[in-house]
Image 1 (cartoon, rainbow, N blue to C red):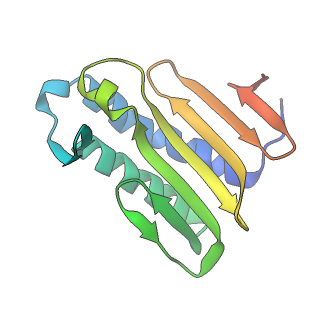
Image 2 (image 1 turned 90 degrees about the vertical axis):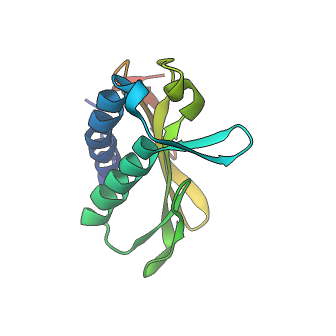
Length: 143
């Protein structure tokens, strides 16, 4: 078993919790509420729900960390040096068309440098993650 940081562990748990919403909604695509942000740029109710879950879960442990999120924008908290970066559904267009190629993405930027990140594909149950100076992994197998 590999050793991961507490921050990455929090990210994994948050993504796993949020994935339940993605999987449920992916199975009911015809019922999704969709709005248009710009040409070819859509946001779903699922994007917003997943983003809310991720922010809530990440904030439970690291209350002071700030956020940069695709839908909510910038949320500045006490700790401006540590920033969670979130894309609740990377691949929204695929998601909207019932194509099972989308992911939940989270990164942690500390002092203007990405120190850990993950991409979670809830359909395939694959978590790609990495930490600075520790390598990259797919479901605990080093890449």
